[in-house]
Image (tube, helix red, strand yellow):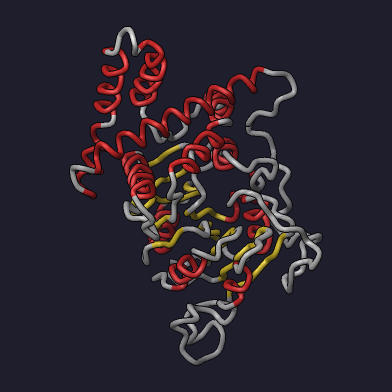
Length: 378
């Protein structure tokens, strides 16, 4: 393999997971050419952890030697943005500073299996028309914090593995992209904090092949409480209908985490709930149909965590799909209102990919008068 690779890790308040993430980067069988962490307005120890990798390789395993030599890899470069600008801006800053022929994006709450980068490069090398290779979530979380998180990663693993192959949607939490792609279509839309993957896919798919592979695998530290999970699902679903409409106008089909049967049976069950007092058979039948529509997922959950986990997973999954339907419905209504922005495949407000942003904050420290952040994670 001849590609040089820059790994870009966007990070916001990632102190819990960043060491595991970077350890996995430096443990790759294909050594990265460059490693960049973009600290997007963090208020925790994210920057300090990234700086501990400045000599290259894991600080815990570092052998004596020059940076980039016996240390086990190139120095970790730190770019700081203040205030928090979102994952799109963080990835764009990484693109601007990258020197590799391939840019491998890895979210700061994920850790790659050792062959992931090598496997992505092999696919790119064998298929010159392929512009992006992205991977799947491992069925075990990065840190196991309970049953909600177990359900979440199982579902993410399940639907992505089933969709593996040539696809028309890319997810950039663990993705290798040829640098030339960004030189041709531009970077991420910085006005979006959710659905930025779908917007960029709108511009990427007409020009390059996109491959989803189970040979690129990342362990993900997911949300571990039900309330935040449902809130996150609702928020991300707000742009789902505009994104699907944009894809349909372009003649594409987006990858989706839930089958039409699963969504339809959940919608029927929710609609039938007000009638439960008079016709209790209706919601009961809806729930039975919902479980049947998700039989494969529930069998998979039972194999991984035992038969008792399957009904729990079914209940949480129903609530998640219900939150998705609610968010999609609200998003569709907003789409109909005048003056509301939609995902249209427009050119993003991205910085150029040929150099660092001239207004970027220095990498030596955070402005001392900056207020604390309360924003969402990247």
